[in-house]
Image 1 (cartoon, rainbow, N blue to C red):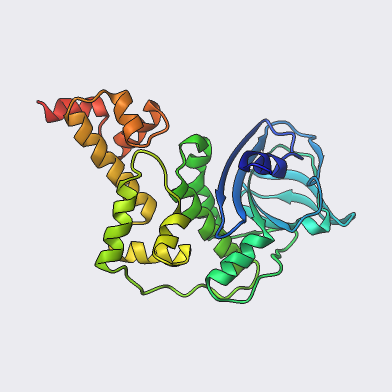
Image 2 (image 1 turned 180 degrees about the horizontal axis):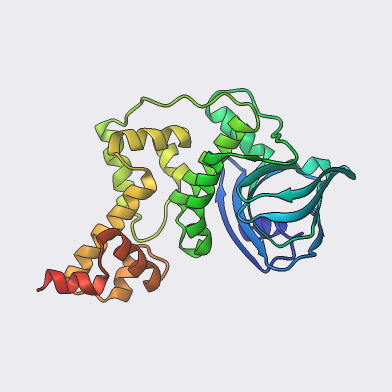
Length: 300
């Protein structure tokens, strides 16, 4: 059976990239959600084509301008020219896409399988989206650009990305793509709030996983909700997204342990950070001072 890593690498195998960074997360059912950043600093890459036709769409966001590029679908040239920075485009893998990449490129690629589109539509009780389409020359979409920018720090350090964050962001992107490129009716904002028992139960579950990781899908299923509805209900009730709440709890736990003079290396492990460097970076960002500075401040 193909692992997440094997699946992710297969989706970008066609690129002779100088660097590749990827985040993969489970979809709502059996699908996988993937975002990749592929960069090449030299021109004349040549042709890139997916390894095989498949029920998959690629949504591409250009982080830098491509001066020269050709796109072929079913062996027919459909676009020739430049792709400006911020351009968003969609490629249907069933059309046997083949891109002649003649310029350097830096591109974020959202891999959207048909199965994920079906799951998103079912989650919102809407008809399935059968096709994602976009102008061959691409378009500017400020929402996609903002989403992409928010993911860049995570793509710089994918080993530090937790399941809650990855699932929430990639689920939101897939839902938006189904709407803007697939014609799915925009999801209705949920007004539902979690009951006191529901919020208490789910936050207790999350507290028990502060030292490790927990899936958004697991939390949602515990309350019998679709993940999208759970995220909105949690935010409406608690005031934060689940991953943001979990991050706050990890920092709170870290402060408690530091105050007990537990070594930083142990604190990082006990609070679910992937490394001491990860812990110091997140702690400093949240608290406004490093763990060492915070300890000096507390015991001054």
